[in-house]
Each structure stands twice: as C-alpha cells, then as structure tokens.
Length: 216
Image 1: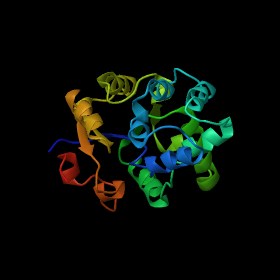
Image 2: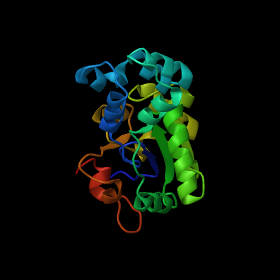
Image 3: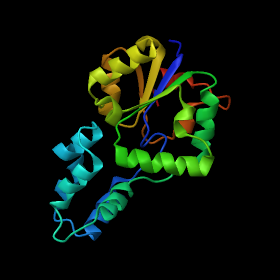
C-alpha cells in the first residue's frame, strides 16, 4: 500500500455541510422566473462560472441574477439567498482537521466564490475564535487561482506550488468528476459519498487503509 504524506481536501460537502436546494427555495421565494430544471443547472451558467473563477465581482454577479426577477431585488436579498446553501461545520470535523494536520501536510482545494468565502470564514472566526485557513498549510480557492476543478491544471498547480508528489498525495472530494481528474494526474483520490470525513480516519487521526486504496 502506498504511503500518504499529503492530504488535499475539498470544502463544501466534505468539511462544510451544504444544501443547494436551500438557495433554490430562497430564490423562488424572492420570485425568480426560472423553472426547476433551469435552476438545477445554474452552476453551469456563464455568470456562475465567472464568479467561481474570480472573473466578475459579486455586484456584477448580482446584476446578472437580477435579470431573472420580476421585481426589484436588493444585493442584500440576493446575498442572503445565495448564502442559504451554506449550512453547519460540525465541531467534530474541525477537531479532526486539527488532529490530522499534525500527522500530514494538509491542504484545502475548493471551488468557491468570494460571496460564500466571506460568509463562512466570518462565521468560522466568530464560532471558533481563529481563522479557518490556519487549519491548513495552505488553502487554494478557485476564485483566487482563477482555476477550478475538474480542470486537471488546478491539481498540477497545487502540486507544483506546494512542492508535493502526486503519488504521495490523497485528494478527498464529494464529486466523482473531480476525483477522476485528480487520479488522471497521478494522485490518489477518494470519492466521499454516503460517509462523513470523520469515518475515514482512526481515533489517532491516521487514514484507514481502505481509504488509501480508494475503497469504501
């Protein structure tokens, strides 16, 4: 079995609980004029992708969103609905991150946007009393890098920037497409589904052997 020295974790759906439907419902309550299939595909729209890559500002994104509403909606209303996706970050996972950071080189790689970033980092600081990024050797955010998963270039960038070897690195994500892309650049990867991040480690913060092998 290969030895893992480095861990790269996804954020939403791995560390932070999220629920897309909460934002969809919030937009519907504001009167958005989209049918459900269009809403479900919103994360593939040009405006969403540009926001996630840091190529447009939050205000420019809100202006794009406003086109789908029959009445005037404020930036604050849109911000609150947009952030409704963000749920809780269980303290048990935070404690786990603190533990495993003492055993592995720990990194974060997240597709995210400035609006969400400001919300959950502020909430974390208020709740835990320190900066979320302090849990990691380095956190990589798509809107800062102007790269996003599953583009293989984002994995190459992180590997090169962190001076780590792909074969000694395990990537954990809840999206299969991202996991497959990481594997294609030579990384070990684990698709987290129907499990909690905590389930992948023993009590001392060491990866369970089946996880390293990419098995459930």
